[in-house]
Length: 387
Image (tube, rainbow, N blue to C red):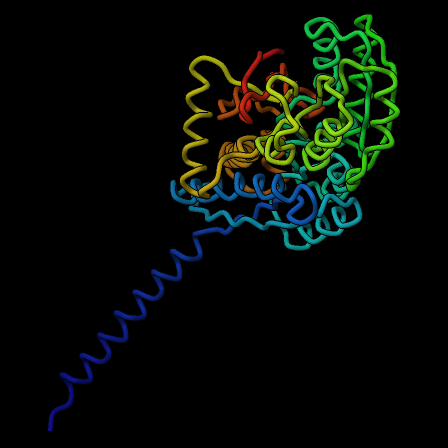
């Protein structure tokens, strides 16, 4: 019996399988996995904003992977490592260290200034680039860390614009200020206070609450006696909405102003029928006009289709931050932080969905725009875009 043909076939088959497996393993080895971290509060009172941020990051990662990005001649697959800091500085530093241990190549976040600032030292010590899409306290980029960047205007600009607007445009005569004592809330309130006084306005009262408070009757009763025509709140929508309800119950009809923390679609839901048309005036870092508006509108439609919900606030800035970071990696031909960090710092004229992004020598966005809004029939309505 001659078994040679059968033996030959077996050998040929084994050889073919070995060759195919080798090619497959080679292709797999050539595809690099690049981990990008994202941190936001996914639990607690502003978890809805944290999830909005995470959705923006996830959408960017999914679209980049669909494009098949190559870095340094090798195809890469981006992996999102998403963490929850619960708006708590201690938890923020803990998850920052976890991302370092997970060997992420860059971090998008955190959402709050109060968690972004302490976490930034951990990333800087490891040389890991960090882009915050929403932290506005000036201290973040003034610590001398070359790894810290942000794609929104800071509190100096945000509070300054609103303070001047309160006096010059809203003709505020008696203005009260309340803040939640967080790094963000106090920071933007302080800048608002300074801008009101510089514009010739009068601050008739300064009160404080916390980002977890639910009872504002004592401070609102104190302010009511001062007859303010404007009350500015430095804090987030989770507190701002209930505060508006309690203002109504006390018969306070003052204009209610705030920064990007209250400038959300969620505010109208939280305030319910306590929010009168035109009563709320707020500003959000960023703003697009003319031909750039189409990019933002397209993003909003893709977001709605992907997540079956509308953009809450910062998702477009997160989306831009991820793409900006990856663009620097592609330009550097490497995802190693030490290689692409210098290219990220040199970002100039990047066209994002939130507008044109260029960084100054501190890592802040140059000539950042702000959009001033009010609410009508529960929907945000643009008043003006200022720089």
